[in-house]
Image (cartoon, rainbow, N blue to C red; front, side, top):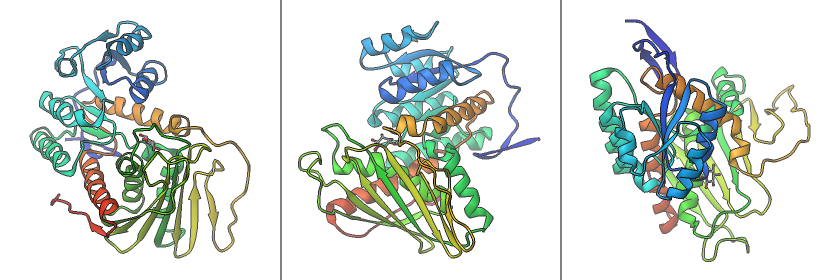
Length: 357
Ligand code: ISE
């Protein structure tokens, strides 16, 4: 059997890629879903959006009207079951992800599921196990989780730099995650499950190991915080090797979208997210400083990452599989999120409980 090496690992070669485009249904056409519809329609090759589904019919109709041949299918489960749908993007609210992802696995079609994979660790594990069972029968993975930062050229470069050994052994990672503003229903718990979750994936992606424990500190809150919520938060991840990752999550800065990551290693450091390219410090190196603008929100900051993510998912889905962070990555993030919410409530260091892989 021939194989192909991709970001999802070494995959068995699939049946020939069909000549026609991948027919995609997008479930949920709020901010992220509508963005994916536009991307699939106009920036990604090899795919067409054939159906959209949303609890708000008017919104679905409005989005479908922009894409020739796109149908509105009111029931998302009917969209997944539709014989003219080859693959699914899930961008519905998180509480619907579990049933929708399981239905895609049941039908054997690839799915790109926006984070969170599901609402808690146990339900994410159920998705992992269902997909494992499918993969054992077919050799194919189906569930990709929308951790788009892995496709951002700067994060990819930082990971390669760490792997090259040029800056030596990583010891500490500093993450800054700032949003200009969030809606009034956005709680401190959501800061963990919706915002810090990206740093969970970044820590696992850059350091190639799991998170063992989480501690959450509540500094003095900004006067712009959503009423009654702690904002900013400081979150500490203890990695299994003993490395530490700290995250400053601040979602009401009133400024712009600022996401920065600095890896401090034994023989130097490297930082991304300043809109300057990679800035390195170490014996004999100095980052060059150029000044540019800061993106107002994540759709702009990570536009290129989303484009690469979706193009690679489409290319893999046409071969019946995925190419990116999988169900296990979604499960690990849910398990850290569950521990993080517990740490936020208790004020205590909380261990992450991961099932055997
Ligand atoms: C949002 O859902 C995202 O995924 C963004 O990347 C993050 O910065 C924001 O805080 C979340 O609400």
